[in-house]
Length: 291
Length: 327
Image (cartoon, rainbow over all chains, first blue to last red; front, side, top):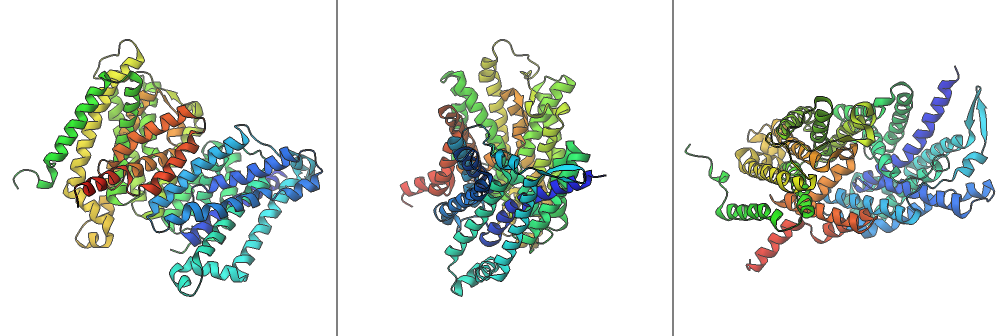
């Protein structure tokens, strides 16, 4: 039996991308207490920017160069986030949660069509990288090397993020603001700056998720909306606002999904949603969340 | 006790206003063309859904992000009855849709009402997506993304003659209008009854409400049930109007639209969701007709409205009226 290892690798690939999306969503919620419904579209934005740069603008260039410009999607998404937070979200912090959800829902619709406007209704592919990377033989099965790269990037991002949040001064400020915004402010933290930085970092992660997965699968319209519900499942299982939770949640969702595709394809999605509901019932704050 | 409590009787102004609006809606098909009438029928159907949704948001303080589920249950009940039982009677559709939404909301509600705020929202979202993924994946039953066709139904046992457009703009419009009026009146009675007051007490302070003897979970559960059944009824009315039921009405962005229209109209006002639903329906239809980038236009309008009119259309109108009166 050599298939299980391939399935496991697929699950890891999926978990890496899910972690990047859900981790950003969770980080933003943890610090700013905003559930960003447009987060999936930011993931899609990163995918589109990279796909366009690598697949269209620089098509035919050598692979190492293409790999080097891959993060452009993440940087573009981070820039977009740095622009959106002060202009669109800041007026809403003092208002009821309903309005925050609503404004991000409006943003979702705007971003969805902006991408259609800029890149057209057809999928944008950047498959040259994926193809040129070749494949390795694992226990008699061919497996694309690029997929292994994605898994490595996902793991590296998790480690980097952990170090960033638990080992830097900025991380301390971030965690303090997350725990008690008013006290942090009283101690001299510029909360507005922290919010911009947290939102930008969350957007960077989503954009990075999009940028690294796009060589393996094209950027298409609607990918953001589909990704968001899965990210929701991840953060519900792991706990809203918890990065460890997002990591564990991403693994759980990816494993169940991979198993579901093989064993029970018809109800694979339903099982995931029911799982999220079950976790919410047993532990409303998620596996790692603060109640 | 002599007669119903005083709060249940609508003040004369409200009653006169309701009669005037009802008369205007009834006279409209003779003034405007069939297309406009059908558009308004869509608006009224969504008005019923939003009215039901607002019993939770505006009166109980629970933001559901899963009302597409109950709308979809209503719509799919109709479509499945057509396909597998050959039913054509609209009354049978409505009865079955009510039964089905009672069943689904009773189960979903018993789970969801234990939580509030964002957890309630996410839980309702997750449960609604269970139904969406089933409608999407079990394509041999539900037709998958192709959906299920819903032909013209018989109204009160009468089979429609002639043109479908004429049928929808006349007979069906009045059918929708009567149910809409009944639902609005019923919802008015509910929110002004002692039960409605109890819900508002729970919304304002759950702990105090519990201390005066209100059984919070049970009241929330009943509100959830009523809310879902209104929305399910709207789904059943929508199916023949649209002629096709697809998983899109179960997908979560559709729940977002229901939230959108309610907040657009103003969730603190009784008539807010109705106004919001009708306005949203026109906005969406014209945006779709005006440009392929209708989502961009609609999203920008939404963000602009939320920024400019924090209390929604109805709330803003009331404020302007009060200011004009010099208070």
